[in-house]
Image 1 (cartoon, rainbow, N blue to C red):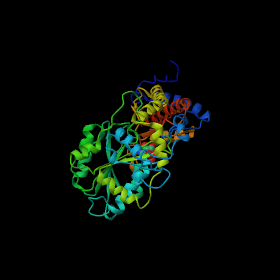
Image 2 (image 1 turned 120 degrees about the vertical axis):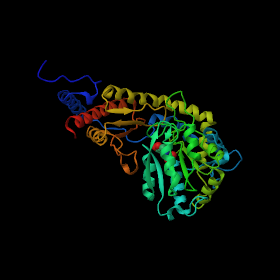
Image 3 (image 1 turned 90 degrees about the horizontal axis):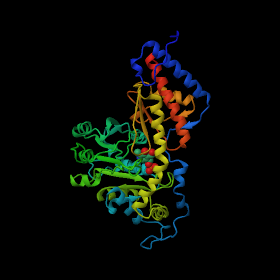
Amino acid sequence: MTGQPTAPARSVPLASLSADQLEAFLHGRREEYAVLKARGLSLDLTRGKPSSAQLDLSDALLSLPSTTKDRAGADVRNYGGLDGLVELREIFAQLLWVETEQVVCGGNSSLTMMWDVMAYLMLFGAPESPRPWAQEETVRFVCPVPGYDRHFSMLAELGVEMVNVPMNADGPDVAAVTELVRGDPSVKGIWVVPTYANPSGAVVSQEVAAALVSMPTAAPDFRIFWDNAYAFHHLTEDEAKSADALTLAAASGQANRPIMFASTSKITFAGSGVAVMAASLENKAWYLRHLSMASIGPDKVNHLRHVEFFGSPDGVRDHMRRHREILAPKFAAVDTALTAALSGLGVAEWNRPMGGYFVNLDVLDGTASRVVALAKEAGIALTPAGSSFPYRRDPRDRNIRLAPTFPVLAEVETAMAGVGTCVALAAAEKLAIGV
Ligand code: PLP
């Protein structure tokens, strides 16, 4: 034995180490971090954007459409057709398990459609509302956490109060949600990302979906914003089928409760895709009535371009398999790097998502902000800690959303090895010296 305590094997839980061993571990991680910083990296794992290689898959769109007429002979370059080209609505109806009549195809962003629905609810109320939501003293929304930051910032902007519930592996915690909505009429809605949720990767089960669409609510105009942004974004051959929210809702007498959203932002071009909404016929008429004050029709040239490009629902499914070939190795690289750096230390947990765009990393309580700061100093940009929570407040300061889709594979590998170093260092600091 030398005077220096031996650094323990990587796989021993940090909490079980003696003070000397912990000190040695911390020393080792500091050295590793110094090497990392000296590399002068500049890598970005912040936003869930498709990579250039993914965008290239859809370049045929740039020379489409091949005609200016839709199936019925109408000129797509002109005004009209507020609910979108029927050929495209048919494709999405089949993909989302809804009726063509229930579908609206709009502009390039489903988030804009969600914002518009929310704004119409605030300004005018839903068909069943006693008054516009903005005239209520308080409007509350149930927010499964961790969740999508832009859902929460939208509500914050509108002054809607957010109430957290846990997002479980099969969807929002039904017991917590039913309890909140049962007795309080100010609770007007909930966000749900039903398939490969951002960021947890959870897939809402048919049972949870059935419970959410049928549960008694004190508000007569309760809405589920069913944001199926990752419905077709499988990372394995085991392709999850989204729960059938509209049919389940109609069957339980709550046809107007869910409003479904999706888009081709991560299928074709993130900036020039097509957004989709599906809802009961009453909700759809309500939406189009308000939209007609703002638009004389969507970009049907883009709709037709997408119809020609995909050809059919199977065309979309085949295309998504090509995305998977690019994405799956990046997600595997995240897991490999985190396993190498952190396995057995008892200071981090992460998921191996079956689809979607994110990996959810939970680090030692109280260290997420420190990890993000350490990574930043080393040239690795991560989404700010707390981003996946309303008001950016993660009560345990432990959640980090990793977005490995945009950088090339080698960069994901480098960045994630660095993230592993930062997680281990922050945990050792916390346990050894309590910072
Ligand atoms: N919904 C979720 C859950 C997302 O993660 C994203 C983008 O990251 C969006 C919506 C944005 O969709 P769009 O590009 O159609 O506006």
